Length: 102
Image 1 (cartoon, helix red, strand yellow):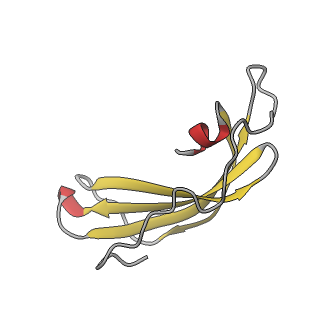
Image 2 (cartoon, rainbow, N blue to C red):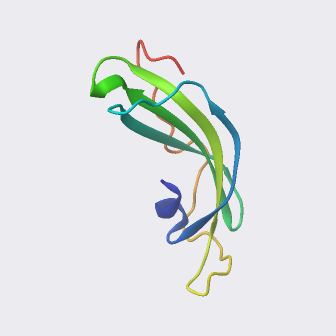
């Protein structure tokens, strides 16, 4: 996940919401995960996550899952800490590619 570099260190998952399973993932599919920063708090970062597959590793990509993950930055003691890096929502959003639905 891209939350770790954005947070400047270790993060823990605190919630997964708005998860939608659109299509199944089959044995042999190549799975690709894409993230974009949605919201940034003092200690937390929320990412939009899209999961796409290449059926049997080839052909057109198919979107199979979308969700929202929220992470909290934690220190060595496991307690929440402020994000170390400045993060801007929208960073990491992949460009729309011709022929690939969103």
